[in-house]
Amino acid sequence: MAQEEDIKYFVRVSNTDLDGTKPVHIALTGIKGVGMHSAAVIAQLAKVDEFALMGRLEEEHVDRIREVVDNYAERVPKWMVNRPKDVYTGEVRHLFGADVATARDEDINLLRKIRCYRGVRHDTGQKVRGQRTKSTGRTGSTVGVRRKKD
Image (cartoon, rainbow, N blue to C red; front, side, top):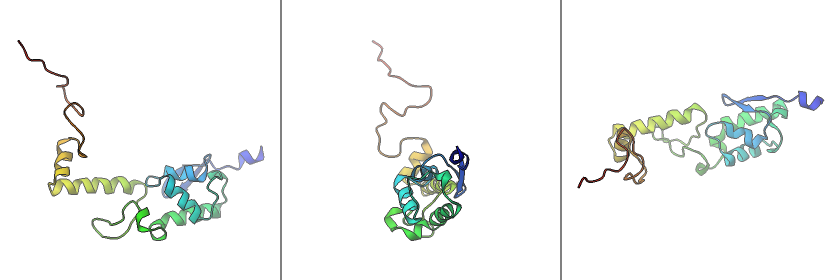
């Protein structure tokens, strides 16, 4: 019973509360910008058992995880980051948390601003990635097939 009480239910990493009842590699995926593969790499770089419960880790292990997350882009190859060449600065970056959504919105606004095909599709609310639009993606009140009158 004593081990059940020493678990931390929330662990704060990169401005995100992670679930302390889950293993490290699963809990790290709670950070936006971290998937299963990068979570396993973060645990490996921090020299932490990825199957240990996040809430039972010692504070020094959690600090090592925080340090690896903060310096992730410098410690992994270029192909493992989610922003291998930033549009504005040209540097290799990996975005976490709210920065992911902000960067995505900025990219879409840039597409709209330069009036490229994808930007125009975003502007008009149509499908952007080449999907068919004849029968799906219909919005508004006019939905259905019209019949010709005899």
